[in-house]
Image (cartoon, rainbow, N blue to C red; front, side, top):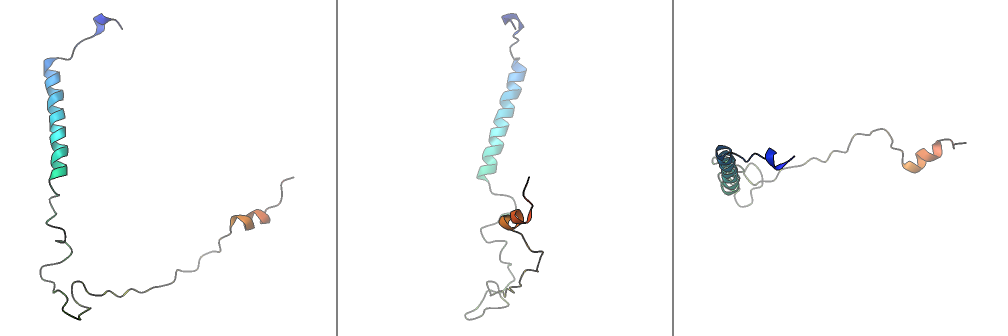
Length: 94
């Protein structure tokens, strides 16, 4: 490739590249600065306006109450072989 093959970028193409760069920068900055559209605050979604708050000593049927958790054992599956047992079960290579 010689110097005669070089074609500089036209003024219109440079303007287009500059506008795209500026639009991209503005979009990135605005997405970092402004909160998402659905966000109204730190706990806006966690508490409904019509749900009663827990009173003193109340632990159930209120926002912030206790939730019972049932601990159920996992179902029995096939036995797992460790690496030592499976290596011992294989015949040795001749």
